[in-house]
Amino acid sequence: MTIRISIDRMLVERGLSVGDFAEAIGITPANVAVLKNGRAKAVRFTTLDAMCRVLECQPGDLLRYEDPSSPAARAGSA
Image (cartoon, rainbow, N blue to C red; front, side, top):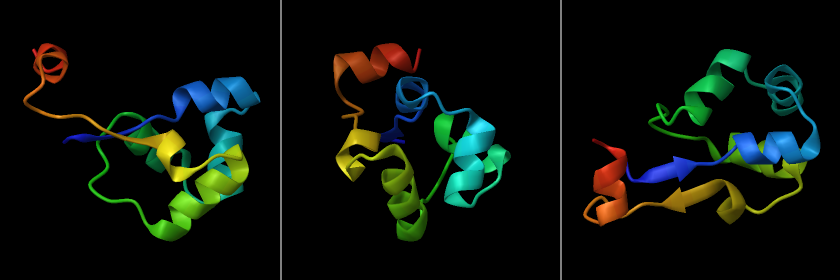
């Protein structure tokens, strides 16, 4: 998948545990792990909204596009 969700850094910067974050946004810690590990196939706008509210950030701070044809992306998939 070429969309990456960056949560780890923001949780560390804000001193939040995965459990506290999950509770604050209304999903399970297992679903936070799915997001963190790049296994999510979709994210609801309500979840993205809650994530941005709790982390005090913009969606672009959490989501990034990786071009699958770029050398960096190919190196990461090896």
